[in-house]
Image (tube, rainbow, N blue to C red; front, side, top):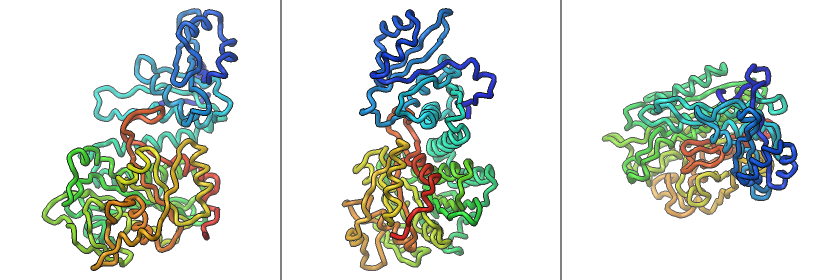
Length: 472
């Protein structure tokens, strides 16, 4: 990773120390400064308030220390991830250099702070005339350098996939990204493309993507020891969503390159698992299609068959993500995993309910919920539990098929989750309705494509989440 080096690197000896403090820790830190530096900090009003940054010069006029204020603990929701605000500010040729984390508030995890640094050092520069120059942080042994770099690199992969325009990230390109990831970790890849989707019984994936100029496909990655608990990760990979015949508005279509954000999440989590060698038998499935419009596009009122054997009446062609996920979830469930987790940029209703950066989380088992919520909160990567309210299944009723693909204007995130639940064959399952996008920048989270909940879920898996109680 360009934003990290380890202590063994020769450049580490010249690193500028960073001192992170809160207002209640400023007096103690201030006494460690020279008189000139104390006067310099006072003249600029540094008090450890949130977002305050100060470069302190030494006797030679060079930068000797960096001070970074993070505000009161009670109001610090981001915690150590907030260090990403500093790495963003230090990016670019003029400011980029090598730094070391000299001190942090007592309540901060230095590992999480390093992750925050990496998240904030990111910039999508594929189409810019000059490559981004990130600042470099020296990782020390107590920060678990290998894990930090694996998490930051996986997050950057997911962000890059989402940020890349659909003209360069169509079904073939997303397919290739999955192949490349698998090759990097010695994993197996199985692919079902175009007409094979019909012969191998993935009819809903085929129907959604058949109108596009690049064929729809299901890509599966298999990795790990078969003796380990089997985990299926499923991602929605709609590389661009026109809405189909129920076409989106201009504003609605503007960022639909991000509609493969679920696939980006799935591949990023798979990357974290494989790079760190978690004891998991991984099955990652990415359902890929472009929801385009042409003469052979599927239509409102059509009846689709599915891998599960259920028939689905199309109420709205813009509710396509749940269709491709339905076939992929059914395939995942057939191998009887301990747990299925799916990620999808699925509903606008989720954004109305919880906004862009707090994903709704659904689970058909109570056993793992408390531990997963605790872990995501501890990692400052939260999700919010939403109900699989079974009475709302009635909203999906169809008079001429087993079900409709949309439930109307009420409880849209819940009815979408209830639709998906019908395809998991009763296996333990979690669903995250992620947005995959930051409308504006905040510390460690630049505007544009982003990953949500992955760091928390990864840590939950690492802590033995798959060994928990999935019976209830």
